[in-house]
Image (cartoon, rainbow, N blue to C red; front, side, top):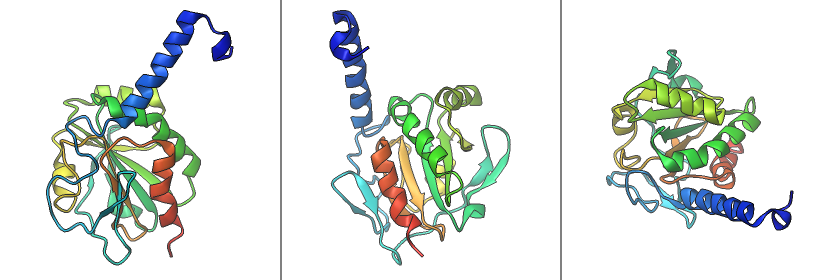
Amino acid sequence: MSLSRAPRRTRRTLIAVGMLSAAALALSACGGENNGKSGGGGNTNFVTNTGGISTAAKGERAATGKLAGETLDGKQLDVADLKGKVVVLNAWGSWCSPCRAEAPHFAKVAKELRGKGVEFVGLNTRDPNKQPAIAFEEDYGIPYPSLYDPQGKLILFGFPKGTLSLQGIPSTVVLDKEGKIAARSLMALDEEKLRSMIEPLLKEK
């Protein structure tokens, strides 16, 4: 049924849902207003474009610290083992509305790029137990693992100072094939913006 033929009440509901989805993606983060800017200083060599995505030129990219531990499904994962592929790291929490808004986009892109040199890893943070986070992944069909980081230690200590903040969730970092930080966003992403962070790195040699 087209929107024009829908009953008035249904039209109002559909329009309201669409406005809420757009508003959710427009929010920069659950924990505070970042406006695409880093909150801790540090030498990250990022240049932020008008879309709120920061990039670092090849040769000026910083390495991450150790990003390893137990996933939500109880397995062990070390991001260093993924070197040679483009790696998308998404910090999220089940309690976070913008995380819910971007989740379908991440699930779609991850499924479409599976086996094409891209790996996705979630960093689940500030969920005091695993069950809400596991339910979140099931609800949105998330096809990739998430490291369980309830106290945010991986976010605080696994990246150079100023890269990510626990007050800026969701956040996304994309590593190049050498495992270095090439792109970052401190807000919810749609499919187009997410792909814009990944595709240039796939072309790098």
